[in-house]
Structure formats: structure tokens, C-alpha cells
Image (tube, rainbow, N blue to C red; front, side, top):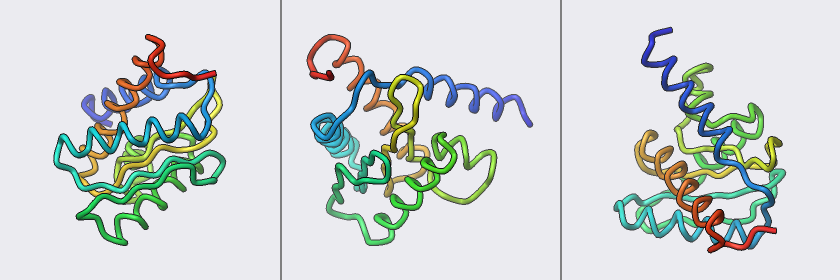
Length: 149
């Protein structure tokens, strides 16, 4: 494995450890989902967004410009995150299953309970949109702007 890939995998694992919640419910899914929509619009990315807990869909939004294929991709990426308990970017490098990189584990205190998925842009952009928005949301949460009980 090259140093670049090793470094990328290490970064992904660090993000998975860092970007965790104390608690998460449907209100958080709505807030986070709408923040992802806002950020995707600012970047000009037409994407599908899905947030699930235990395979139960809490948030789904398909922006103008997306297709049924993007919805199918989002569902497939979510299934990969649920199966491996890692982001789809991490799994893609290790398993090379060909799915996009926009799936990220929804984790509460070290336990993966679901997934946050973005599909429709380039895989790298999907992933960066999820991670960047999670960092923003969790930063807001730590400052008390989002109520997570």
C-alpha cells in the first residue's frame, strides 16, 4: 500500500473516531440533513441525501438534477456503511466495490447506529460534503447551537 493511500486511510479512520454524537434522533437528522442541503446548494452539487438509523430512513432529499440512479446509489452506499461500519471511502479503498465515497457511519459514543449518505456529485466531493458538514454541525453542537440530549 502506498504512503498516500495509507495516509488517506488513517485520515478517514481519524474522522470516523472524531465525528461522533452523544445522542441522535429524528430532530438531529432533520437539522443535519437540511445543513447538508444548504452546503450542497452553495457548492452547486445536485445530490441525494439519506440519513438512517438501524436501516430506518429518517431523512431523504433528492435535489433537482438528481436521478433515480443517484437514489439507488445512496441506498447501496448506506448498505455498505451498515455492513462494514466504516465510511464508503474507506471500504472502497480496501474492498474496491465501486461504490461512491459519500457514505459515513452515524456513530453514538463508539457504536455505529446508522449512516449519513450523499450521492450525486463526484465521490470525493460527496465524501467531503458529508465530513465537512458533520464537522460544522458538531462544532455548532459543542457551542450549544444544536440541542442534542
